[in-house]
Amino acid sequence: MQLDELKKAEHVTGIKQVTKAINKEQVACVFLGANAEGRVTEPLKTLCEDKEIPVEAAYTMEELGKACSIGVKAAAVAVLKQGHC
Image (cartoon, rainbow, N blue to C red):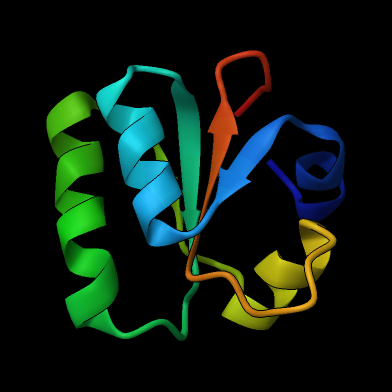
């Protein structure tokens, strides 16, 4: 999925919200900020692997925040199952 497609997809942002959505089995794929601290993203990445959820880490936190139309950086964004990955 590209960033412009992420803008249109239904999504949640932030480590806590993404984790909650994964645990509720609502997530199709996850974007992790390429420049996010590993101690923050590694547990989420492991959870995605356990749940067999695709992870994309090619974009910066700034790019993810902008794609989600929020005024701050985003370490994690999850596209909900209605979206496409």
